[in-house]
Length: 418
Ligand code: PBG
Figure (tube, rainbow, N blue to C red):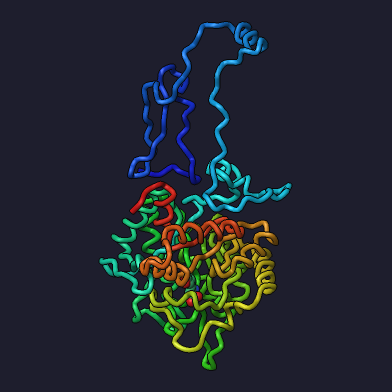
C-alpha cells in the first residue's frame, strides 16, 4: 500500500465524517502497524451536562442575575517536591519555554518538516543475482540489478520514497584507465535504468556521473603518467556517460567528479542529443572527505594511489564553495549538492542563502555507518539520531537529502516500525 503521509503528524481528513452526530465521539488511535484507525465510541467518555431546555435569553438572564452554571474549579497549583528552594520568581518578560510547554504548542511552532518525498535513496547494484551485504555499511547491500534492486525500490515506494540514485559495482575486468565502460549503453547502469523505468515509469532516477567505478585507477578522472587528473579529457568522457544514462531514461544526471566545466559541457551534450528535459544535479561543494570510506569499500573503488585532493575541495574551505556555486549556476545546473552532510551544515546554509536553486545534501556512507555502529553498540538511540540528523540537514537548508536511511526513515515517518 502506498503511504500518503506527507508530514509528520498529518492525520486523515475528518471533514467527510459527520463528527457532530449526537451521542458519538470519534477518536483516532494508532494501531501497532502505525496506521490511524477510526474508533467510534458511544457517549459517556466525557460527561456532557443534560440539556435543561432553556432558551438563550433565559441562560443569559441567569448569568446576569449572578446564577452562573457550574464549571470545574480552577485546578490547584501543582506541588513542588519537598526541599525545593522557595524563592521569588524572576521577573522575566520573555520566557521562551512558554512556546515549548506542550506537544500541541511545539507542533504549532515547528519550523522544519521531514517527508519521504525529500529523500533520494542511493542504491548499490552489481551483476550478481544475490544481494551481498556491505561490511562497512550495516543494512546496505550490493543488490542484484534484476531482483534485489526491484524489491528494494518497491519497498521504498511503499513508504513514499520515489527517488533513487544508482551506484554500480563494475567487474574489475571492465575497468580501464579511461573508464570507457561508463558510456557502454548496455552497461550495468543503463540496463538497470531501463528495467526500472519499464516497471516503475514514475520513479525518479538520479545517476552518478564520474569515472571512479569504471577506472582501473579508482579516480574520478583519467590519470596522466605523472599522476595528474586530466580535466578536459575527463569531461569529454563524462559527457558520453551522461548521454548514455539519459538515453536509458535517467531523470537527473548527477556529476560527482568535480572536474571544472563539466556541468556546462554535460548540459550541452544532453541538449545536442535532445535531452533538454533531463536535469543536472551538480555536486557543487564536494569535499575531499574521509567520510566516504565505507562507500569506496562498497564499490571497491578506492584510488589505487594518492588521494582526490586535486579535484575535491579542501574541508577547511568555505568561501571556495561560492566559486563552485556561481560556476554551476552559470553553467545551467538545476540542483546544487553539498557533500558530506552533517559536518558541512554551514556550507549547506551558505548555498541556501546565496542561490535560489534547490539544494541537496548527501548524508554520506561514513555518516550513515557511524550512526549504525553507535546504535548497534547501544551507545545512541539509532532511530532518534537518524531522524534528528535528517531534520538538521533540512533545517540547515537542504531541500532534498541523499541518504542510505531513506527507506528506514520513510518507514518511520509512515508510523511503521521494523
Ligand atoms: C564518486 C562518489 C563517491 C561518493 C559518491 N560518488 C566517493 C568518492 O568521491 O570517492 C561517496 C558517497 C558516500 O560516501 O556515501 N564519484
